[in-house]
Image 1 (spheres, helix red, strand yellow):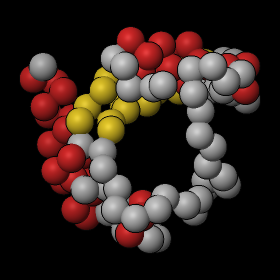
Image 2: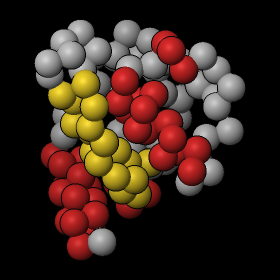
Image 3: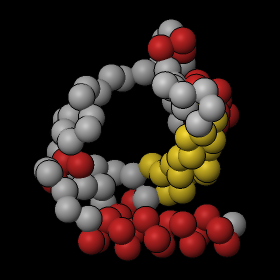
Image 4: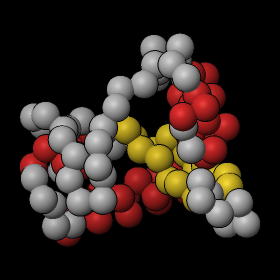
Length: 103
């Protein structure tokens, strides 16, 4: 739990100093909740690993793609999981389902 609190504090501090392209992408830092660390093989290189520190948070307004994000899609537990990156499919999705955060 101490590690999660430390990571949460770091994320909140980073949000206060981050440059954002639009307010919709700036989460309300007080709403952040640490969900965990997830690691799996990279999409384009199986010899590389991807490490993600995952948070939930409230966002004001509508979220729209910007920067390196080309598009956003809504995903439910019944959608085709083969379209997801390995870390999302194998680690994040099961964690979200277990915690009841995905319907």
